[in-house]
Picture 1 (cartoon, rainbow, N blue to C red):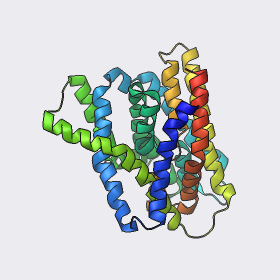
Picture 2 (cartoon, rainbow, N blue to C red; picture 1 turned 120 degrees about the horizontal axis):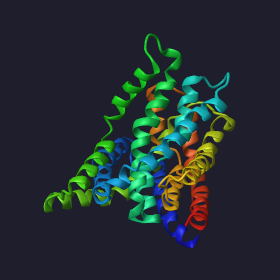
Picture 3 (cartoon, rainbow, N blue to C red; picture 1 turned 30 degrees about the vertical axis):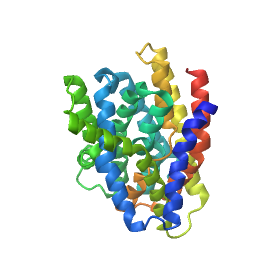
Picture 4 (cartoon, rainbow, N blue to C red; picture 1 turned 90 degrees about the horizontal axis):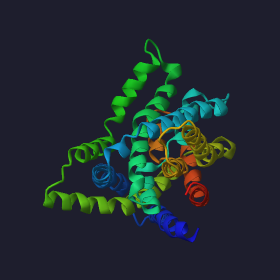
Amino acid sequence: MQQILSVTIPFFALVLCGYVAARAKFLPESAIPGLNGFVLFFALPCMLFRFGASAPVRQLLDPAVIVVYVVSALAMIFGTIAVTRSARVGMKDAAFGALTAAFPNTGFMGVPLLAALLGPRAAGPVLTTVLVDLLITSSLAISLAHARERVGTSLFADILRSLRGALGNPLPWAIALGIAASAAGIALPGPLDTVVKMLADAASPVALFTIGTILWRAGEHVRGSTPPRLYLPLALIKLLVHPLLVLVAGSVAIALGAPFSPFTLSVLVLVAALPSASSVSLLAERYGADNGRIARAIVASTVLSFGTFTLIAWAAQRILG
């Protein structure tokens, strides 16, 4: 446990530093989009490229990992919609709530955290989950959010439209370039490699700090009250049900003889145990969903995840090795 805490405490402390800096106005609110832009378009793509280029292609495109994680993501999306939709929560809000419960903060938090916790071997499965969440999980949830507005188009057409939007995100392209470099055995020339390394080294601390600022801004701009019964279940589903579902799906895959190691299962379970991605709040605001509910669920999942993630990491280490 002490070894795990030595990793998780600094990571969550940086998130807290970002929150405090924004709340205390040490960092102007107008600077937050620029900070986010630096991470999203420069530092994080370089870090993901380096992880992708240094990992074997077989680890980055493992069919067993893709199947287990996709099945779990689909179950999370449809299951969360089924249990949260009500007279108060319509289809659009239920779909974005499901995205909150199924989309972990892997890019900004999970990649560096799991690499520090489990070593470089974790990079392959983690990058695979980033691709699945960016291209499949988010596209499906956004398409389902428009179910009541759909006139003359199919769900499949909406998913393709959402997928095209997801491809505007630089992260899947950075991973794809890393995979291509790994497959071709290409190394960047010296000066360019140094630039990429410098940006990649900045990704982890700045991304964690940025999460804190985004969480503060999301809470600051929420208007009106949202009862805890509408957002707290989403946080608990994300932190407890999602990793349990991945554990069950991965265990079934192992029992069926799939080439799926306990270490890989540990990685996927810990990915699922991460808090909700802060970007879901921006998507909810863009598409007109109840952003107050989503923002509060994200904040709750991030606060609670320090305890839940640490305990799940400790349990995974003892049970799965």
